Amino acid sequence: MAPYMSMVENVSAGSFRLVWTALGCHRRHRRRCHHRASPTGLGEVGDSPGWEKPIWEQIGSSFIQHYYQLLDNNRTQLDAIYIDASCLTWDGQQCQGKAAIVEKLSSLPFQKIQHSITAQDRQPTPESCIISTVVGQLKADEDLIMGFHQMFLFKNINDAWVCTNDMSRLALHNSG
Image 1 (tube, rainbow, N blue to C red):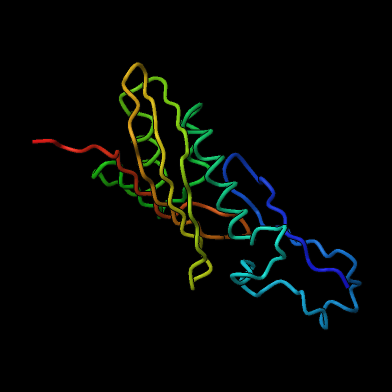
Image 2: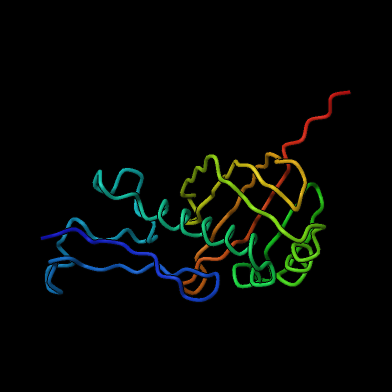
């Protein structure tokens, strides 16, 4: 019997669906197969073989890559990753709801932005969510390069992963 293999599939402009595929396990063997998917769909820490990242790492990484691609190239399409209950804190300014978040991100005072991710970490939560932190640098228009850090909470709702919480802050230091 071969283990289950997981894949992340892009469902729409921003939501992701978790797809489980059985490799070599016949339907009649799935109940007895010790490689079955966990009930949460996230697996457990250390569940996957050394060559494969845990599914929550794959989902988080794919989501982050997609988020920054949209933020850097077409902020108006970010509405696909948020829901009406989502919350955003952007440099101390809070807003809630998909429409308010997209309005805030679309109205940021720059025309062009480019992010470079330095590090990212993820963890599964007991509630079957994924928390992800990102540290990096950004360049907006002709401004100097600035550091930033951002935290996301992703949740699977109706077989699609969405961002329920998003907190971002520029890494600026006052020297006086």
